[in-house]
Image 1 (cartoon, helix red, strand yellow):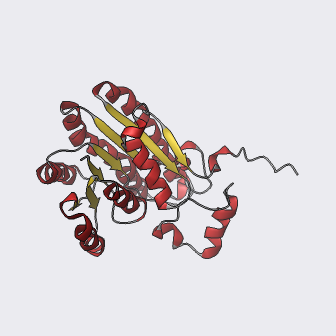
Image 2: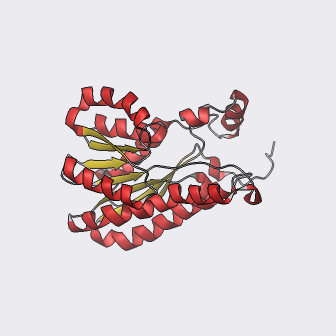
Image 3: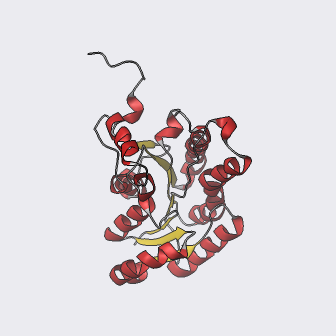
Length: 251
């Protein structure tokens, strides 16, 4: 039974990923900063999956908390086979409008967290035959967006960090890949005004934004033995959003 740690796991893509992994027989450590959110979902998951599911409160941008998460995971599960680095935040604004605090926070949560998780979990994987790491990046790391400079920068960093990790760790049997969603129908995104959601639906080549379950299925593929030669991949889950050159439609 494979043992997986999922960060940002109490809602949205992270929760959908944890639920899918549990359904398919994995053991899953859910990670989040909100015990209140965990209290709403863990009784249901525990009732169904019992000892195969656990929760650990952790701010993955803080070294001591990540160290505690690693120790708790090894103690409770006896090992780890994979990580889903899904924790992330969004900051809107042109570059000159972003505060120092927001700039630091978006890089701490979206990028530094991957560094810290690697500091503790990768040495274990190296010593125990390898593993799989999947990061939630974004099409916004592959392309630019209006009014999203700090988010573009952070997700761009995740994309090139993944490439370097894939090169360094492949020889140890550790595969590192990204999923790159476009706008996704998470509770956070769907809290936008309906007209904003509809704008994103209309901009998508398939006429709708992706769902958390669709992203979770892509993450599962990259974690699983179905993708044993996939390393250094950016797997987009976008309906083709990133294909458009921006030129006028030719009618």
